Image 1 (cartoon, rainbow, N blue to C red):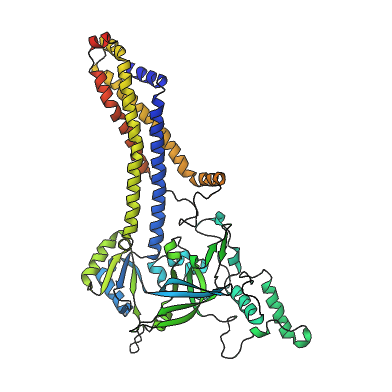
Image 2: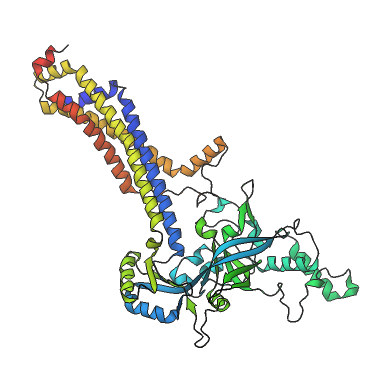
Length: 520
């Protein structure tokens, strides 16, 4: 009992120990926050990378690809069919995207990907990142009659409005085509966003046309009436195209999202054909949806088109067999953990000089390794904070032992054992570690839970965005609390506090009672 009483007395009277407690608290809280945020970033990043890259990628070394995707998929199923959940062929080719905005031609470098709308959802998460609910259920390259999301679905209702997309699709295309064909206007001053009354104007124009010349003024949409054998954008579309959202929008000085392109606009793609030597091919496409994976690397470069259209335009269809070429086959597994096993099986079955077979982790290995290395280095640096607190405890305890030498001698003269004296200081160190790590755990968890609210307050105070969505992938700071990580951080802090008290406790336990009583 005397050990607990003395330990409690030291805790109450030795306020200098609070410095060590605060150091342990800050170290534990900081490590919990950093690990939770890094875990959240890592998880979200892996999810979005994995969303476009399948578990296993079977691809050709040559840009011209390999012939007959169906045959190759049959062979892949024969080798590793018991592990495979779905497959889809794709064609990848570098391209240039050109469109007109503000009276000027804008050109962007993109990665053009031909996908099969029937099987794209079987091997990747492409449909999940589209802005139209029906396309998320089943990918279609046909333009929709409105119904696009008017807010960032992945970031929540409070992520910012996209009201401009309310009339995207055919309503916007009909309005823009009619306006462009019927009127001469200054393109630099023309608004890309149709006014809310444009549908009524179109209906009125149609009524006046039906009534004839005597019904009123000249039909303003007369120039927009279709001609024979002439492409009519009010009723027709080019081959569909899904555009990475970062290619179509930007943020103004007020951090408000603006759109350069919307579903319904026409764009031009320039890409090389599959001939030798290759020559440039120009094709027109109609934007039918926007792709938003929250990975800037993908959202700012990826453009998706129907695979059969791209094969035809590039000359990737064999004129004799009418069978096309593809660059790669995306493979989704029943269990992602079997990726390395399936990769090795396919590498053994197919010649490596013709095919490159890898997992999505192989593709993004340097990026994933960099994130893991960064997390490990941060943990080492932050753990030094707790180590500093440990040295503080060590110094304080040595000071207490020296100061209480006579008291220790009296306790030993009264019959206290060396083990009992040692237990006083070990319990004292354990108490400091428990208080510091316990308070640090509570503060760290609270900080993680309310981290986005704290970021908003700091942004309001400083006048700058603490977490800028235009720099990072997400509108909110992602954080995942891992109980195992929290447990080892708390246990590590306790271990350091106890270890720091061992040497002073041993010195106190080994003091001779007579020498301790004679100590001045």
